[in-house]
Structure formats: structure tokens, C-alpha cells
Length: 152
Image (cartoon, rainbow, N blue to C red):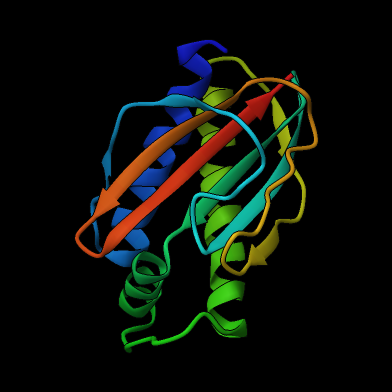
């Protein structure tokens, strides 16, 4: 996977969370994921088609997503409920859209599907394409999350 195709996902993630939740996540060292176990307690996943086929997944630790959604809504959140899951889906959609816009600026064309949200300790995330799953871990003041990108 080319860095020029990954950087838009990293940049979009930071930009969207900065704008919508007033936080600035710090990216860590990317790695290739083995297996389907989620890195977080709630994950949003969306299919992407066009010049290549793939998926984008955001997987959040409970403390992290509750903090992010609390900042977005201006009220404290204490559990991963339907409202939080809906917000994870919307964050996934917005980050996907911003990533695709950034990719279009460098000559790639993609469309996104409707995101799905999976939650629960130990849940699995199945990417629709067979290929390496690049994971970019992020840290925030309230915990961590991971962005996974998989293209065939």
C-alpha cells in the first residue's frame, strides 16, 4: 500500500476530530494487523470502492470514545449506548468522506458505503477485501483508538 494513499486517512482523522471534538490525536507507529480481533470496544467500518476496493475501520477504547462523543455533544457520556454507536457511525462516515476528498485531490476516485458499527469487548472486525490491514494507532488525552485501512 502506497504512503500517498494512507496519508489522507491519517490527515482526515486528525482534522475531523480536531474540528468536531476539539481534540488533537497523536498518531503512533503504523503496523500490519494479524487476525480479526478489534483493538477497541466499539468500531465503525465502511466499505470504499473506486480505483481500488477496501475498507476503513475506526476502533475506539471505551474511555476514548466516551470522551470524544462527550466533547462533541457538550455533555458527559458514561456508557456505550445507541447514541454513542450512532455517533461512531457518523464519525466513521465523516472521516471516510474527508479521506476520499483528499484522495481525489491527488488523482484517486472513490465512493463510500454506509458505515456499520460493532461493539462489545473482544468483538471482531472483518475487512471485506483480502489484503494487508494497515493499522495506525492514535493516542488522546482520554485513551486510544486505531484506524485500520485495507485495500486489495
